[in-house]
Amino acid sequence: MGLLRAAGVVYKPVEQLDLGPDSNEIYVEADIKAPRMGGLLAKIFAWILESRIFGALAFYILKRLNRVHKFISNATVEEPPMFVPLHPYVDLDEQEVIEIDSDASPAERVQQAMNCLPLTAENSLDAFKFSCFRRWTIADYSRAYRNGEITPLKIAERFIDAVHESSSRPLSIAFFINYDAEDILRQATESTLRYERGAPISALDGVPIAVKDEIDCSPYPTTGGTKWLHKVRPCTGDACCVARLRSCGAILVGKTNMHELGATPSGINPHYGPPRNPYDPSRISGGSSSGSAAVVCAGLCPAALGVDGGGSVRMPASLSGVVGFKPTFGRIPHSGVLPLNWTVGMVGVLAGTLEDAFIVYAAISGHLPSHEPTTLPPKIHFPLLNSTNPISNIKLAIYGEWFNDCNEEIRLCCSNAVQLLCERYNWKTVEVTIPELEVMRLAHYVTIGSECSTALSSHLENFRGRSEFGWDARVVVDIYGAFNSNEYIKAQKLRYRHMQIHNKIFAKADVIVTPTTGMTAYSISKNALTTGELDYVNGGTIIRYQIAGNFLGLPAITVPVGYDKAGLPIGLQFIGKPWSEPTLMHLAFAMQALCITDYRKPKVFYDILGKK
Image 1 (cartoon, one colour):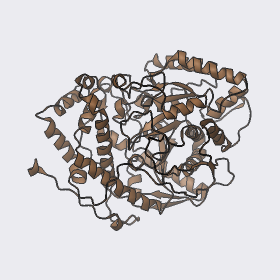
Image 2 (cartoon, rainbow, N blue to C red):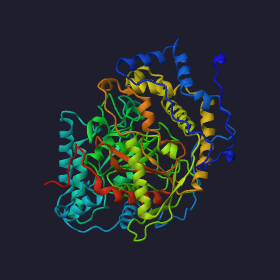
Image 3 (tube, one colour):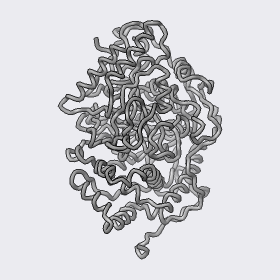
Image 4 (tube, rainbow, N blue to C red):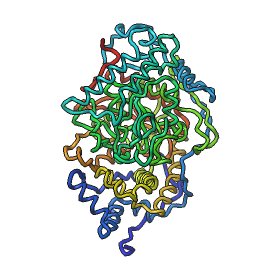
């Protein structure tokens, strides 16, 4: 196909790029050429891609139409490749933080996190009367247990009843792929006995926490949302992050549903059902950590673990109206997580509040096992959220054309939220230009696709395994396998390039602020229920603001800031410098405080702690 070779871009040196507000760098909108496919159309497309006659031509056309050839394959990039987004630790001299002993146990770190939170009145649950909707927090559970108002065992029983009820509704919410009532009750009984002895392990003791089915958690298999992967990769124990939660006494309540192999942002799984959005069960909860978002949104757990390879924690958090937090690459151990995308995927936290995300982060962060890639071990700092001195002189970088590339309701809501934040704390916005964002999206897609294809290659030789895929995941894996070594190397060169671009942005500002998604949750199509669906246009809109967090390993957090006219949640995202988790939490905490009176109760909600 040499005669049809598309011309490639010649990238000029980063030093010549103007990143100021009056830059002549053109904002390139995503122009995704792929129809929405579900049902029979998805099957036909998979057959075409797997055809020896038509497959190669189809892949060539897809790459060309979607500008992979122009921006990646045939591009001239002078930068060296960066294969892993490891950041050397730099002491950022952040405001209102405390350094944590790196040898502290997970339970000790949880206690230190609790010490950083504002004090709450030691009242019974019945004394809490709010004019606005709120979810019960980890502190609420801990207080209720210590005061003897309820026991972990009673909570476990209510949790099991709620999960059962959610499965028998007119529309099953499909929170979980696996949960074991007997194991949940066993953990809850042990926790109850600890409270009776007056010796809980930590504030997490007896608190229900869910785990995305991409993370090992005994006694459950790790399916990755498939019907077959656990057969060839058995789960032999807990992932490091799960073991740390278990050591704090948390009740691990099961493996949440997810998009098969994390393939698209919708979260729809044809094998286990679509995890539905509790704000509107006819809509997606977002993927790929869809079940984790839904279970937190619906009040069953104050927090859940997810894995974020392309916004897969932050997107569902935003679409489902909860907090989603993805730390710096290397901050949380990745051992025991399915190795589907090892340089872009990171364990993250979904929680009802920033405080709960912080507590779970405190438990699971820390030094990495010796076999995981890292630079010098980074220091651990926690934000002093109870400080009477709010952080000052914060500069929020905004790239106007990018920020506004979303639907009008999101644009207005997020713009108003930023303005409110700046007015309240006297922070400033800094107008910047971040060039080549569409290039970065494509480079990330090549990277995550190549890594996933490589990770699955030994299993894909078995046709039986391929035949057990959902049709949407089957198409995605076929496309992933079409990227070659030249394209992967070019993508890593672009990773280094964009690392330099973002370093220059962070020399001007503390964080980058964006909407979290370009649209709110869309409707679940009937034909997607049995085959899954391929909706790259909507998917591209949802993922628009996510890529830097994964491709460049940057920390990022989303916090709910409002709703559209249909009552669907809208999130605002802060993207930070490497190792700046405390500053991100300060910003999210401040934003949450300004929005909390406007939070709305989902249509599907289980008040398992509050009701008697």
